[in-house]
Image (cartoon, rainbow, N blue to C red):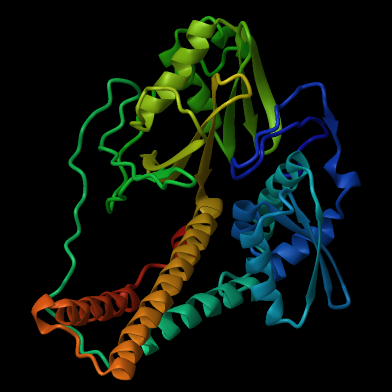
Length: 407
């Protein structure tokens, strides 16, 4: 998927940075990166999902020194992740800046390279990086279980799974209701995922028409046509830029700018943003700070992840990006999200254990018994039993190998 050299100014992969795309920038990323070396390192050391999620790319391995390209040099989470992997290999890290458009073009090219190599590589072969990532996750879970191994499991505290009831959106038929949960510091709304994602039903009618034809469509139809094109193949992204007197929409596919709709009337432009909010069941009021919404949808028997990012520009006007992940990229992204959740849970568990130790030492050193009438200790004990049961349930989960299904 090495994209043709040409108009390839692109948005960042994760959505945390959003440089303005331009069809006037000529980008030949292969002059800045040794593609063969980078792809080999992605296969053997840093998996694609980590590069996608953390906006990083391994550039070269010289002796025991790994040169790592980073879109955000201050991303401590990315640095910690890479250092944990390199610790198993006795390698040191040499980070260096990497432009977001170069990063995205390189990852897009890697996807095509990976697809071409898939037939020649046995599915049973497991890259070093994936084995290490799995080992890290197992190690984290093991530490959490060992901290509570002396607690008996309570088989009567099985958690209840609650999913949203189906509903239908007035635009772009989406069967299912989204209940976004947002974080305070970095708002990301992720809908509860049922066993089968809600259907995404679109009916593009003008796929054979030139891009400029779309500019005359009403907002709802315009979005349907853009989604139809984005979903045709690969990783797609829409970028909606709010200018002073008009709007601008860029449609990119696998790192290559496919179309730029210039000077859209603001009513049409804002209507497309509202349509995107309806698609993801996001409040229609303009955002005051960046907000990301992630929803799962089923399209033509394939699971998609729609990642909508809303943000105000310097003038306070609302802009948006929509990225669609599918296939191998989506599976890698899910794995990384799960590892992150596990690390967060482990950190909270360690804080919990520290508080219990403080209670014990305080009571013992001051010869003060814990007040029984408060029933705090019994509640803590019940909580530990529930956690022990939930960990057992997680360890018992079994899933079919997605790669085996593709054979």
